[in-house]
Figure 1 (cartoon, rainbow, N blue to C red):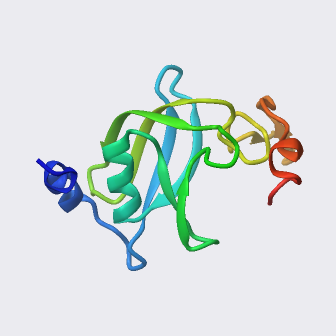
Figure 2: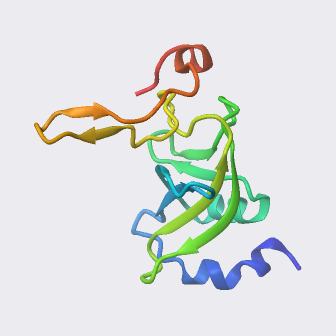
Length: 137
């Protein structure tokens, strides 16, 4: 059975937006910590389902983005969840290294403080400058 046949029912249940994308939350499978939000098109979702390694669609570069291809910070997919409306996905993953391109473990590394300021609430797990040559924004 081909991968596309194996996942046809799941893919049919996903409601991609007008740009052919669906938002995807990557969540640590062991701790439940939310690590990042990205987008997938049908092709990147099928690659993710087949290979069990996260592959996203880069909206800025307009190309497939195999998480960790540059940094080595890959995401092994343990479980895939589709929400009740079919328009959002959660990947429960095992993260190697950090999820955020800035070097933090999670892209959600800033918290709104009671005084209205942003406070760092996460840890840096890799040097983004060494990994990418500069911190990407």
